[in-house]
Length: 232
Image 1 (tube, helix red, strand yellow):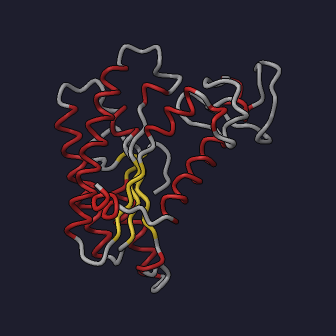
Image 2 (cartoon, one colour):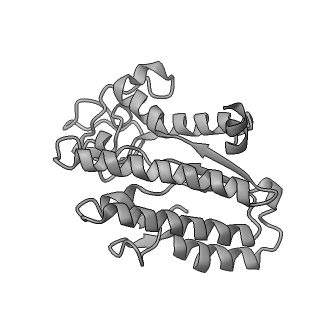
Image 3 (spheres, helix red, strand yellow):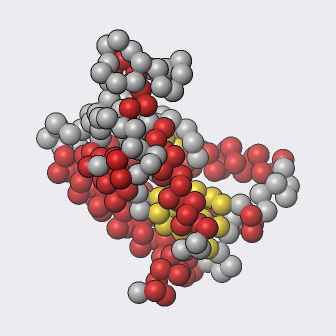
């Protein structure tokens, strides 16, 4: 699932321009049926990294907690749909605390954002544990992005991938993208790669490289939800 502005299901969060439901049932299902054997169960990882838009687009709703419950239930249904299509290896990534995003730091909704993210991540992790127990011959991984993005925000120098960051903000001149990754605008103090964000909500290359590294390390170590539970 990689579509800008996506929510989990537009029938739940109606302002979403795209959703995971469509990607699975109209895109992936059609494509996989045309490519039999292209996604072998043992060698294909289905990664689910969703929630930012679901939370932000409902942040002013008085019944947001009920909406989160409904969305997590829908994620359960969509995961079962993927399982019935042959998926067996799953990676779920928690949703980051949007209060850390430059656009949101000065806003009065910070407490609501924090509460919503915590609620979402708790329910998502409980779901992943339940599915791991329920679905035979499946493996579920859960990567918590919250400690990582918090650590980079507070001190990017502790990771080689983000040590180049000189600001955890963004420069508006780069919002539309740059001709080269390290483009330097006269209107900005630093080049694009030296800011943690390319705009008010999307991290730049360094953080994505670090995130990919940490996830791959967890996968390589086989640290699934099942293993984590046995280590408790």
